[in-house]
Image 1 (cartoon, rainbow, N blue to C red):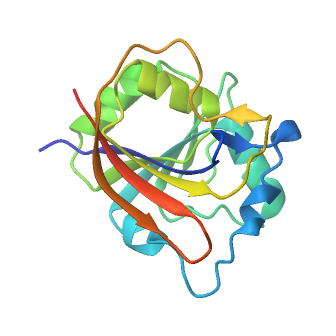
Image 2 (image 1 turned 30 degrees about the horizontal axis):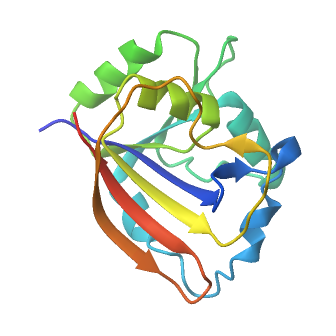
Length: 176
């Protein structure tokens, strides 16, 4: 059985994963309290993370240590940069990387953004499952979760959960 490639991400109701200026402060509108919205359970099934360089750079402005430093991480970039611990800055062919990762033994693979990487993964139908946490806010503009230029792809709703914060979390399986 091959490893699954997951996207686990938050979005506004109108489909933006960031406000203009790549501002993610809208995520603060959700009261996390003791509720991690299933994230700890999800991340326990993951041993590999891929994300775009802009997303990585933004995360590193927010924290001292990369949150997934314990997992093999591939930062998709156009430039060469030396590895940092488990973090590899990958500037090769994305299809080659995905095929290799999916064929290796291990836990599942998590795409932690950004929009460009997600677009390529969806466009090439490499994503197996999506968990989208819809935050109760309309941003009106910003970075879209789903960009134009993909083919039709059928999905199956696995579950939908609502929370007292107003957030709705949808779990989708993509048809192959």
